[in-house]
Length: 438
Image (cartoon, rainbow, N blue to C red):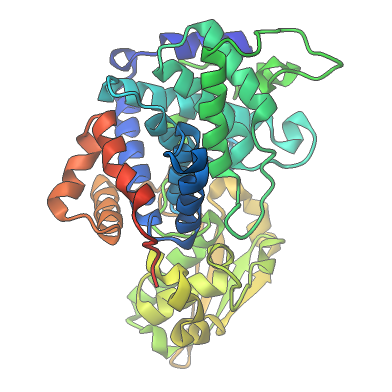
């Protein structure tokens, strides 16, 4: 699949031509990502990004690139956003949707937004696959490197760009996007920088910056789609194979690797009728390497999102795992920390043999009341084989919107609003005082 073919697909994509299941998934992706963004406005990471946006343009108002940055930081702040296993383990929605909303000019329709959102997912996921070390060589790159490319294609398409303009946007984003190595705290996978780079790349292409130079220069390909690896079946078939349909959604605000352990723990407690206080200890068998994620107490909210003991501690001590547990008071909550201290991680060859394509499986043994119960979860809740129901997505969205301070009527209206109305509803969060959870 060449860069030119990618760009032709993006230029021609229209909402009414998309398959019904793709349209349905795009609607879900918009609602889920919007809810994550709203909840993320209460995070300390967004508070910092908001202050940076206020400094942009010398106080005269933030640029579209800076708005994209801040909104993407919010959308990914709690690690609650959707993702894709085969596509490099990336989180496409939090980059693509926020870049599109920041680039909204006022006349785009909701169908324009949704069609461009699908374009962004399809290009991002393919780029993520091609940038994996085992495919393209080099170091592992997280979400930012690939989603900047996909979001740039989406924004250029959203703004009515030709195939040539979209091609330029893709190649500019590939050159100017973040390297996206995982870094904590706040930087994480460079999702904010990716959204900013995507908007900038699309605007540069629209203004005539760069050029659609097809041949590699000094052996360096202009984009992942200009390499021999782009012929791989996973990267091919754009417009025929829809990778947006194989994204996962998250029931809990923490890294996907923790979800199977949470699901197994919750299921054992429910079956046995045990309270979190009754648990004496828990052993979590994980893929080798993941046993290092035993951060307790976590030094930041972002570290907490990767900590098995902290997330399971929230479940034991609070009965749930919610965004507010991952900030400020939650990070030092004695009940959560005491419960998390009863969790031990064990590297397991059995789990390693399953591989991450089963949704980062885990096996849990809970010891309580003089008994032990074991459960292995292969298909993590929210995965393709164990997808969240529409009612679960609705509840997640409503809870996230409530955390942002929206009343029920206002929250229910937003997912169906026009792009201009959505951008207008999100703008006050950029100029309001620090709203992070105390």
